[in-house]
Length: 143
Image 1 (cartoon, one colour):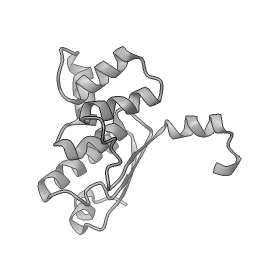
Image 2: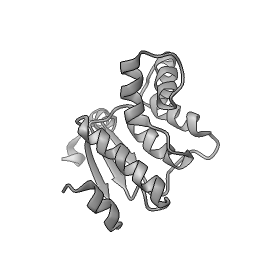
Image 3: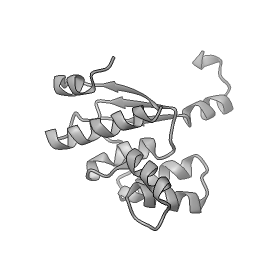
Image 4: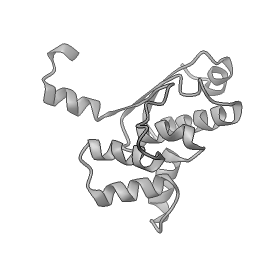
């Protein structure tokens, strides 16, 4: 199917998918905020929308309670190592592919990332999570 899609269709499909890589794939010349903003810029979001999304993602600003809560569930900050997770979810994709997202994290941050992914899944986003960590598998308790 992929090979039959036109470039424009493939671009639209990619915008509906968020990816979290084990090795982060962050832009080294950008800080955490800029890395997350970049994901919104790449899909053509307006500057005001980027500012709102990133501010909500980092838990700052005077935004409405419901909007802020929704974004914070989706973008809760753990530390700088979770920037890839925030970048993958900032555009609220229909599907998140998380390839060993906790592979380089300590147990506390691993738990936090798994909880975030579970909440995102509870909100209706499909999450595909790959891991070798038995503790993560047991805590997710889903197939």
